[in-house]
Amino acid sequence: MSSGAELTSQEYITHHLANLKVGDGFMAVHLDSLGWSVFLGLVFLTIFRSVAKKATPGVPGKLQCAIEMIVGFVDDSVKSTFHGKNELIAPLALTIFVWVLLMNSMDWVPVDLLPHLIHWTTGMPLGDIYMKPVPTADPNITFGLALGVFILIIYYSIKVKGVGGFMKELTTQPFGHWSLYPVNFILETVTMLARPLSLALRLFGNLYAGELIFLLIATIGLFQLPVHFLWAAFHLLVIPLQAFIFMMLTIVYLSLAHEDH
Amino acid sequence: MDINLTLVGQLIAFVVFVIFCMKYVWPPIIGAIEERQATIADGLAASDRAAKDLELAQEKATAQLKEAKVQAASIVDAAKKLEAKIVEETAGKAQAEKERILATGHAEIETERNRAREELRKEVAILAIAGAEKILERSIDGAAHSDILDKLVAEL
Image 1 (cartoon, chains in turn brown, orange):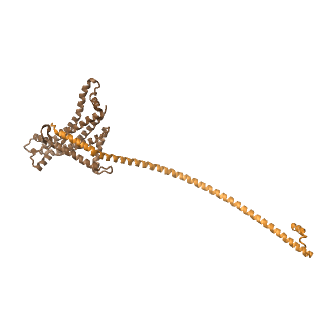
Image 2: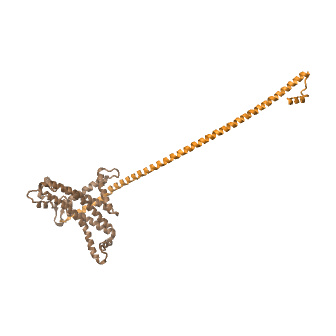
Image 3: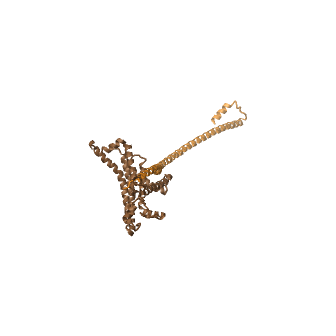
């Protein structure tokens, strides 16, 4: 499904990996990533809110059953890891899991489908159409999520342990001697920063790689169809797993922030 | 990598979605789930209790049945004893009544006989007087000879 004989594979892939962008430099916004992200978040909230409004403790409907399965799964995951009392963590985990799952699922949309649809409906030349529909293959999106989690980690660390307790945790371990406190501080700061960084980069890396492989497969001609199928089937594992990992690590990090040493 | 305002936009969307989820999505759904879990747990506990109650009731019924049988047997025994006693008492009373009636009868007969004998004596005395008058051809003054007459009556 190469979009034209005039394109080399490299140009085709580069074109597909470019975002629909307005603005320049830091003030730029990726309309496709952010648009799909917000749209999928609204899909999630609309479906779940419609169930929540009609939720009955009696005999549930089929949609309510399905939603309750997801909510129950998230609730179990939270309860098995986080033992404090916190009204935020469970809904946070649910939002992350379902939203990231939906965003990851955009990986299953064939790479040329959306650009061609736009081409057919608006008549824009294919070369001008930029549409990267997988939000989680955009580092802005994954870092946006990870930054939110990071802020919560800092917030709860300070709320539970106090500023002094938090600083003490950053400086007095792993080495107990006072002369090594600066070393401790550097180590602990790196640990602290590694959490959101690893969250964001893991999700981004997996989905970006998945998207890239789809694009590579799209350049090999007729044999791409079975290969596409195999790679999409493989993503049955990758997509929910990455969503689950992001949710689970968020819960773990927040429960660590609640722990007093 | 090309970090720009998209990140900020995503962060804002994240915050808004999480707050919405926390306020309007999570509590009703988890509330419904937990309420249903509580209802089911109550139902199971109630059925357990009912099964236990049933077992207890059956045991109690069996025990009561046994007790009732024992009681019935003892009542029948008592009734038999009472019957025997009543029969005995009645027989005794009848015997006494019979003896009393017999005694009364004997007494009446005795009185009657004595009265008859007395009358007979009187008759005989009159007859004797009449015979004596006939023999003597004259009347005997009852008052004058009453001592003789009395002696005669006493001898008869």
